Length: 382
Image (cartoon, rainbow, N blue to C red; front, side, top):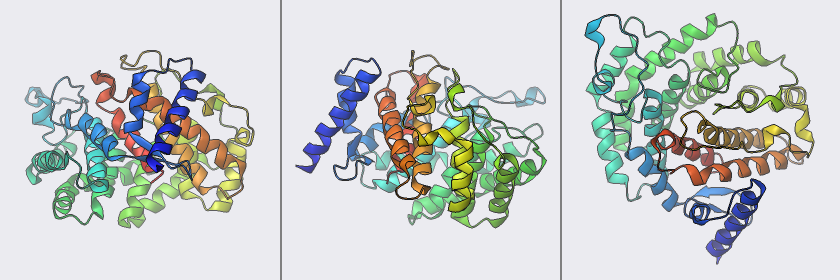
């Protein structure tokens, strides 16, 4: 009976969302009921086993798929002309390095959450192949070559540390082997944060890979997970340096046409992590003063995605998912009774529901990365 209530509640929410966005309610929207359930008492979304399998399939189909591939590779000489797999024996799939990394993170999260999922054996097999000691030593060696200083800075760095954090405290024998094997790459990435951030005077405030707040946010999570005090303190200091005086974020300027991150919400999300509750309340009042209002400011309305097969426009599906995880986290640190909690929670739910039907669009432009965003967003409510 509980499942039936959740199922029909989900369909009603989906129908309502579909109508508000001017979309037809069709079979594709109905499939969302297999991805998530809605707790009838709390209204929280949760990932189902069927949903875990659905999302896992996306990454399993790409983490060992070498082509098509978009390399970010500076060549010093002709000897460095090589295939993606030769350059990156662990993270050569999923179109680009960072997508391969967060595809592995997603599979680790799903396997940990659903250890008996049908894809468990396939995940373990591919992890043992990709995350071998030899492969990860080669990845670390690549990072130490000349010309790699800005490779994947900081977006890919952040996802690598998110993968490490996921594996670090997982009491699974194979996971601990993968974590140990990953150590040389983790060390190289942490060294880059410690070297780069002190010298970066100004934050990058875009809605794409270079966003500084996003790059610091996941690294901060890692620092807390493994008790890396040096990295933790550095990020707290730089967050204050970059953002503490910010006021009136131009939320109505969002989204940009190729955004998959929200400049305003990524900053607010990071500051929710590094400030204490009293400090954060004062800060958010000045940074996003319109959140108190019930009017749907642009930031709280899901972005319209006109073409889910266009490699840049499809970024907006990712934006809807990343906005959701930011809004849910921000809501979680606000005090009970603050009306922004409900405003943000409602907006987060509408954002994620607007994107879920398009995770499996059938087009590689979105499928190689969107599932990771969906799983991370849903993790906010677990």
